[in-house]
Image 1 (cartoon, protein in one colour):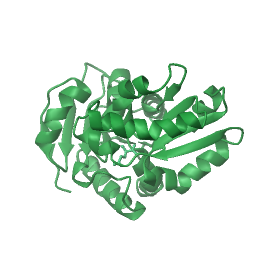
Image 2: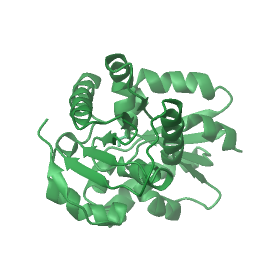
Image 3: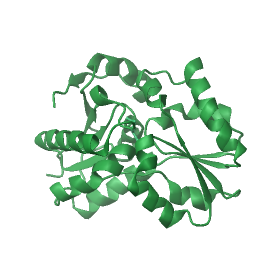
Image 4: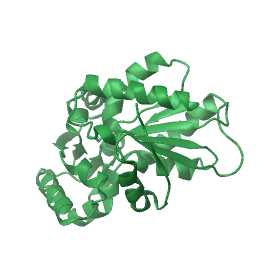
Length: 263
Ligand code: DGL
């Protein structure tokens, strides 16, 4: 069982920002990655729709033998992680949420900005997160509709991406944010561009590495860590597999085959 693969999924290619952290930390694990690009973006869809997609993808990954699941998507975690944990009580499942706790610890100005999808920012899970960790700071939220599509297209630093991002970041800086949370897994791919648009003193916080660490801990706890040589990742897309094959070198620095997903 410990040699079985780990299933990772997102609404699209954003979760690859988490996958690369998992690969770096756990190279001996074999990984399955599903991009639900046929239904991207999740951020503007209902929680019910996202729960249903998450169930189907989780079922598919289980059929492929997944010993653990990673929801490499803040929006899907907010909508579906509780449901998946109830359905598969025996399965280790790692979800993710915007890094409010570390940002609250890091801020000096006491003002933190959160860039995330509308779905994440409107969720009860995000409200609970603020209740728990943001009592002593001010949190300014900023939905970024359209940014996910730019990353899906591999437009990580095009003039249009730059213009969109500048428009969202400006009000956050004017509010006095010295820490920005990248609360969507697509956004770490535009970190270099974001770095150009904000002063050096502004911290950019994301959770990919923490998720990989938590996955490792959970595998250890269940005695499920794989051993042996470096393993590969297999990819599926419910959208256009060739479009994903074209952006993979840019996002993962590798050429790989992407299989179509029909669930
Ligand atoms: N990458 C996802 C997240 O972390 C969702 C992006 C989307 O499809 O809207 O929230």
